[in-house]
Length: 75
Length: 221
Image 1 (cartoon, each protein chain N blue to C red):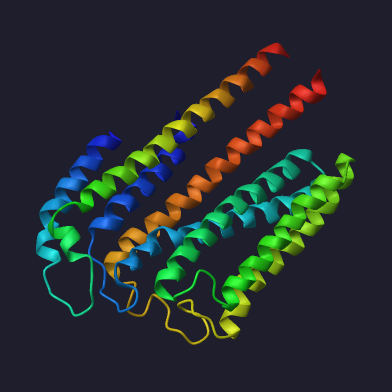
Image 2: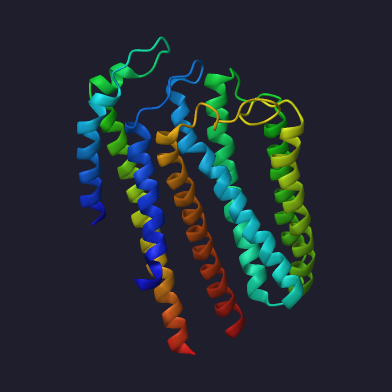
């Protein structure tokens, strides 16, 4: 579910972004980085790291839940 | 799974902020350039920290009025997570400062205020560690924690507004609201803040549950 939303969001942003970021400014921005499209690599890397941490958290959460249950059964 | 919906919401909001935080256009500002995107990641740390320390202070008050030990556990574990978020906020802020203000640390009221309040909270943990008797420890640290939270608020919210500060919205500087935080940025910033607050609460509940388990095992055997 999360995955699908992410993909949909990425597609939506991919298509709409080109139109939005075209006005040229005197202030230096990371425009070449966006034009080459490689900013998506950074997003992917960050997302993977965050999702990894998330999975770890969920596993920890479950482990604690299991321990709680075991302790309850023991009493 | 039903009572875990808020964890999913929090995780989703943070992922959303990571993706949109890089993709959506941001206003072009001198000095800041692309680093303005740090707003989506650095500032939520502080918001999240404030909320979690608020929770900590609330549970300290609750402990004092009820003497229920569970309240003390929540208070101490929240303060712990608050410190984690504070350290993350401080280090990310330091990196940001290096490339915009020119130094890792500047003598800014807000920075020094935060540094002092971190030390105040450090003293809270030292205080907790130095009292052996449980009832006494809970009571003394609860009183101290309430003071610590008030001091923290004064240092981070009140004093920077009364003095000159490099932070936006402080000491006569225009806030991010004025021109930087346009409606596109709001669409990323607010979900990021809510997401990180939820993540902080999640961390806290994990710590609280572990602590309760530990107490059960230690005292029921």
